[in-house]
Length: 243
Image (tube, rainbow, N blue to C red):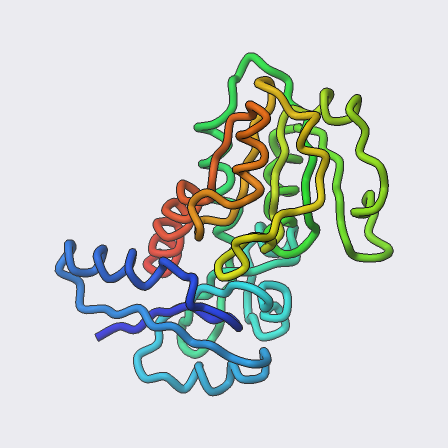
């Protein structure tokens, strides 16, 4: 039996095992998908000793920390500085970023091709780097809001004016704020300036409707969660593991 899995620090929120279990069962595949919770990236060495481990996904907070362990990396990893999918070939670790595949798919289905969009991007972590990569490829300008000092971005305490929001139709949350179990949290943002011209995207999929999306929807914005992206990421992971 081939083993695949997910590496992260807190994984109780993950839908990936359920998705892959159904996928393996429906396709009569002799494979399993396990959760590997580790306290530090150094614990990866223990995970790699798992018998018949052929590949794994990576989530918060190890998408960047995994990179020194890679033998090879795709362009998506090199350009984003983040990796969330690894294929094991003869003990070599080959890294890919399926966040890029997933967000590209999500945008393709969400945007009106007749509109020249601009985006406001909340967060500058691993998932954000993939979103930035996709936005740059699609030539969609964006403003970045980050809590990290020294980022080339506005910070959470700076004023995001009504004019800025009206000129940016996409509002994208790439942070884990509002993810289960912290479902009563939402990014600090002037939601009252949103309207029917806006599309609010939250990469979080658990809960399906985050407080961020509720606040955006209450101000008439169209809302999209991360489920479409998750499913496309899972498909892209399987394609990469078997390429």
